[in-house]
Picture 1 (cartoon, rainbow, N blue to C red):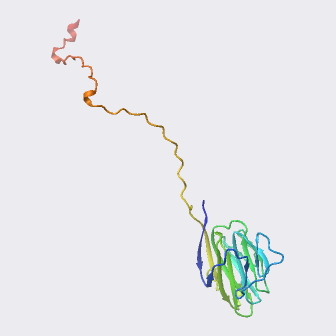
Picture 2 (picture 1 turned 90 degrees about the vertical axis):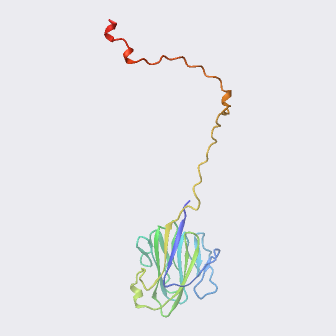
Picture 3 (picture 1 turned 180 degrees about the vertical axis):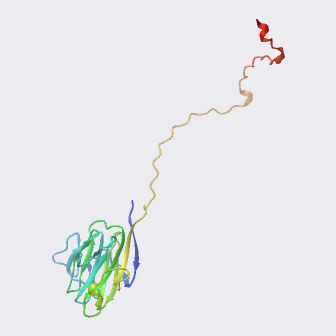
Length: 232
């Protein structure tokens, strides 16, 4: 069986930690507790800041600590970007775009994501002061990852796109096929038929005498052969 192996490259990210595997509530960067969702979220959703968002095999969820408009951009392996302008691509979709609060913004895959590199940017589209953010990531392997950082007002934000050279680039993830976790078991071998018993070799003196060879005439000299013509 093959599995997905996830390699991670990081840039412009400060702070990292692990989210408990059983956590169902993710809060903003400076909040010790988070609001719950009423009514409760469905089985394929997650409660974030009092809002139900989609969950799946791969997910990016962004929250921040000051009211404003912070945008999550995810570039998929094909090169297209999922964001508030283009809400789907590469099988993933943005199901929440918060323009006035503290998030969340959420991009998720409810099916197997394509292999390749994913770039993530956090863009301060419309904020008035330095804003701390938390990016929570659910990896296809089931691991939960967390990235934290700070963004500030920036005139470039209104037209920014996401790339490795963007000033708003946070992290890149690469999904590639792994190798089997165990070797293919050998095919079962059937029992080989038993070989017949071979009699042990007896002492040479006990072997029966071989019949004597009959005396053979010695070859004659060619000159002793009768002349073919004389046979008439």
